[in-house]
Image (cartoon, rainbow, N blue to C red; front, side, top):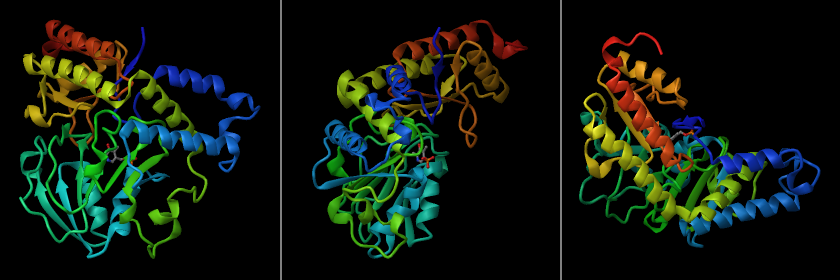
Amino acid sequence: MPIYNFSAGPGMLPAPVLREVQAQFLSYKESGVSIVEMSHRSKRFTELARHLEERLRRLMAIPDEYAVLWLQGGATLQFSMVPMNLKTAGRFAYLDSGVWSQKAIADARRVGTVDVIGSARGVGYSELPTWPETIQGADYLHLTLNNTIEGTRYTALPETDVPLVADVSSNILAEHIDVRRFGLLYAGAQKNIGPAGLTVVIVRRDLISERDVPSYLSYENHVDTLLNTPSTFSMYVAERVLAWIEAEGGVDEMERRNRLKSERLYRALDTSSLFRPLVTDTTSRSLTNIPFTTGNEETDEAFRLYAEARDLIELGGHRSVGGLRASLYNAMPLEGVERLVDTMHEFEQEGHHVSYKNV
Ligand SMILES: *Cc1c(COP(=O)(O)O)cnc(C)c1O
């Protein structure tokens, strides 16, 4: 029986890709050297990097007016690189939809003045924040498009001339994102693209300008070139993951599957007498990250162990919210979700929440 990994990140990757990487690891394309021993300036690697970018551009329909940058430092480094590189007036608008937004806000405050124009803090982030009708005078408006920890996602965006900046770490390539609506998108790779250590930034070229910051931190130095040694292994695996997505039918097909998977789990949660979803507003429910609970900490933990013993792993909620969470990234098959739903029913029927002793 396969193990189903519901980790929020690093997340599950497609098994055929992992097998291919294993087979190619000692001798990349019969070169006699491993991909991790190869110069990032070599012809082979240059070609790989080109394919990676071409695939991403095809999959997300990224227009030529946008540059694609392959960076390190995770989504977290973008919390400060974004304000450093997009600063003109020095005022930034943010929507506060959870833990990752808060971290982005905290780093932007080191660079300029942050206006939090909407926050869902008052409702414990179980809903999305609302925003004012007109947004003006900001260099950009930042939002976390999918809230990995709280399980909400935006399905409508503010109408404004201010460039939208979005953290798409946990929903990139999992659902359709209209790149043209945004000035900049960024994502850590380890949720849906490949191994950790790689960050992708998709930025409208006219927003990039020369900046008086340390060389690595300036977007301009990364446009259409490799400034320094990138995360070569992660880029290699990412290229293979993107090839897999293309072969499977692209982002539309990923979204179709993710809708099916998440609907299956939400339905089970909505009709369960033991478990309940943390996000009840059906229009803002994430397709990829689904937090849920029994309402009792010990029962949650009992279920986590019960599921783990049945090869359904990493179902613990984020340490900041507790409870349980299932992340359903592209590589998670529908069977994994069906196994989870069946296991929830079994747990419920066996009455473990009343007299749970051991697994
Ligand atoms: C995981 C995650 C982050 C943090 O990413 P790192 O690559 O670890 O810095 C930031 N934002 C969102 C939405 C995430 O899901």
